[in-house]
Amino acid sequence: MSILNYLSLITIAISGLLLITGIVFIKLGKREIHKTCMIGASVFALIFVGLYLLRTALLPHTPYTGPYRPLFLAILWTHTAMAIINFPLAVMTLRYAFKGIFEKHRKIAPITAFVWLYVVITGWLIYYFMQWLNRSNI
Image (cartoon, rainbow, N blue to C red; front, side, top):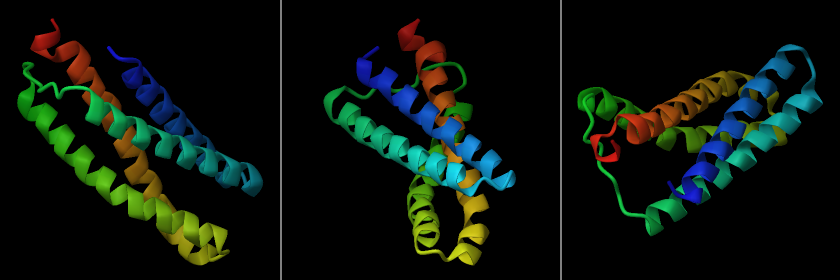
């Protein structure tokens, strides 16, 4: 497995952990720590996207040929759709926060967090399918 795969996994995991940590801190009323966590989550998510694009450009595509193809495809398709939706949601959520429009930020942030976490978790599931359940890797 390439170093780009490891770096991708690490960066998206850090992004997800910072996202969860940021949610916990806002629930505790710790706004500055929440802000730091969410900016960090965003930075690591952007690094992940860059690594993903680089990996996609440099490494050949490996199709999933394992035993759970319908499940894999359902996870992959929903992951892809939610990842596409997540980007503008995250931008709007951050924009509202930085502009101090907290009423709108509070409305959209839970939706963004749910979508973001879904993308992180399904991304890890896709990795699991490709590395451990793909017949071409056995």
